[in-house]
Image 1 (cartoon, rainbow, N blue to C red):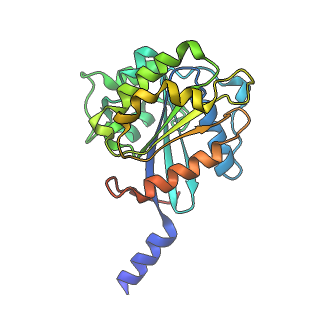
Image 2 (cartoon, rainbow, N blue to C red):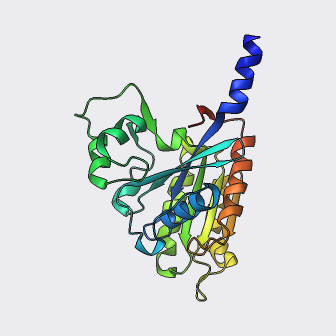
Image 3 (cartoon, rainbow, N blue to C red):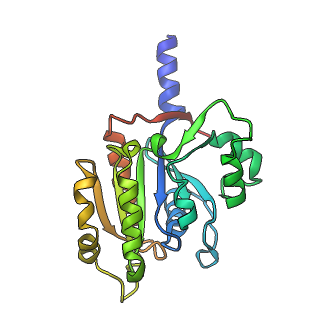
Length: 242
């Protein structure tokens, strides 16, 4: 009887939780994509005005539920000085988010993020390593900024070569496709062609997207869910539904 009730409880009240990193250069549209994702998958969510979104100088977080899967997004700042933190260890997020940020589900400042990295600060019971603990990566490219495409490729190449991300599915979003002068998907694939061999046999998709209008957002999230669910090398975390 206990086994039956326990199984019923897990079926009704628990979801498989997957951590998804949203990476890319600053101003690529990562936070706008996160807001659109929460708007489309979270009932009654009243998001911030997209016109008021500014450059992230720390990180933004959010969760969406897609069927039995819960995606926890970590939108990391893309400035050059913050890219070095993408694959670093920091204290357990649940602890330092509540300690440093009055609204932990919204944003963390660069100052708070760096304080969390400070070796003089007491360590919590565990370490959080973004790359090692994530189940998938969404890499956002500003397809209207041809001048920084090479810089974006370098950041992508450095990220994808990390051993900690081995086997992790990667969704490459060619954002701002609503702008007439944007680079096409073939243009971006050509620019990133040198990275193909480094991607390996993992799931990887390059998709057109407009985070501002929402085009391609749902399709990208649904593709990511399918990939993380079937990736047996990184099992999900189970969390009670709250």
